[in-house]
Image 1 (cartoon, helix red, strand yellow):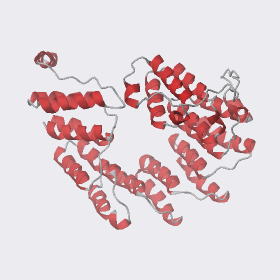
Image 2: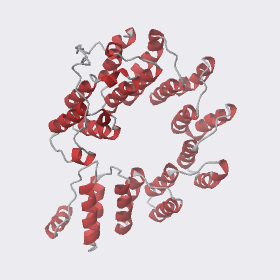
Image 3: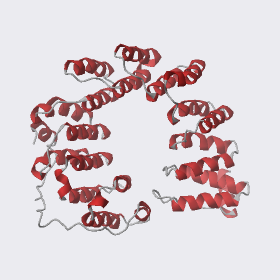
Image 4: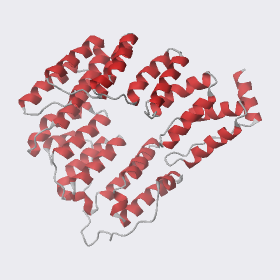
Length: 399
């Protein structure tokens, strides 16, 4: 157990729980069939946690279904049922899988997703007694957990002390996480200096390293600040990816240089980069913010013609504007694309589309949207077809 990690968790009152012996470990078998949809339909969160633990006890295959755990932990965290998250993940510490570092860091990551950094740290400290080695991989998972929980001081302390305590060397992922934390607290220059330290330690910066700095410098230091990092990327012969170009596009748009942004967009193919949904969202957001719905729609059509699927960010920008403009059919088609890709989107916006479809007597489309909401695997949307009384009440409320 690292001394630094122990110092960081003074407030924790840890209780040692004996690891199940191989004789006491439940025999593996076939878990009862269970799906995300079935879990989503379970309204009792205590029962939900019991079902997860029951199926996990029966089958190692179930324990490898990451999407189920991501969904369940996110749902419990949204409900602030942290006691149930602790119960699930504590149970999972006592399966034989815990001896595999990949499984262990998965549990650390799930604690991070729930914002439970102290529990992630406690588990990291316990890994040796649970029979799991700690390498730079689990260390990186702990650093990421601290960042996701916005415990930036812990990131800095862990980075300075834990590698020496454990006898491990930081890799590019470790440094990228540290640079991310430094940028989050506004220490951009210190983040940039990490490039020199990486070189001194024989660690090559990656495009992710520079993209992290690029985003922060464009955001905090304006376009010229971002261009400083852009130039340093040339010095290091870093091959830029679409994320790099999206950040520069955002920098140009924020600077009011729309013509230059469009010119850069048009040159992407020649630069060896194919635009992704983030590229189009830069322009869609800009025109939505300006209230130019026609130009926003034009970029949306270009996105579709490029065979780039929209995402939930595209949805959140466009649907309110489509509805304001009476383009309920267009909003309906975008909603269907979201359901097809199983994105979790804002229920209020979905209901806005349904209300608009009903207003235009497109009842079949409205009913289809409600049914799609009911059959969604991840969220049980409470979508309804408004009645005449509902519409009248809404009109009265607006008076």
